[in-house]
Length: 178
Image (cartoon, rainbow, N blue to C red):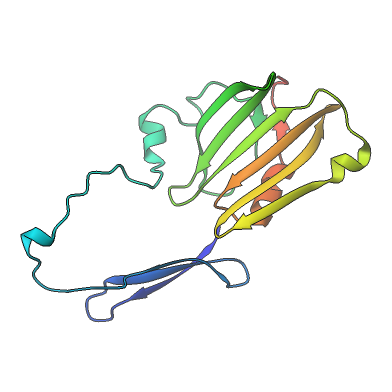
C-alpha cells in the first residue's frame, strides 16, 4: 500500500491536507484546502451533494452478496495483499478470446486483474518481457505468463505499488483451467 502524510489544524483537528507517498517518500497525489472559512455558513453558500460517492466501499461487496465466497468460483487463485477482498469478477469475450476480470479493494484503494488466454505459444524471451507504467498513484503492469503449458496475458491496473503488482502476478494460480 502507499503511505500517507496528513496535515491538520492543531486547534480544531480539522484535516487540511493529505499526501499519498510512494515507497521512496515521493508525493504521488496531493489533497489541500485552498480556501477555508470556519464559523457560521450562510444557507446560500451550502451546496447539496447529490452525486454518488467516488470511493469503493468494500462493505457493499458483502451486502450485494459478492464476497469472495459468494461469487461463483473463480478460475484463478491470487495471493492478495492483506485487507483486499474480491468485489467483482466477470468472464467476457474480447476479440474472440475469453478474458477474466477480477476487481479487488480494501475500501481505500483498488486494483483490477485482467487475465486473457493467448492461442499461440510465444518464444521463451517473450515470456520474460513485461512492462509497467505509473501515472500518479495509478499503476499499469502487463506480463505474459505461462501456466500449465498455456500462455496468458496478465494485466494489473490500480492504486497499488509496483512491488505489490509484481507479487500479485507472480502468485497467480489456475484453480480450474478455462
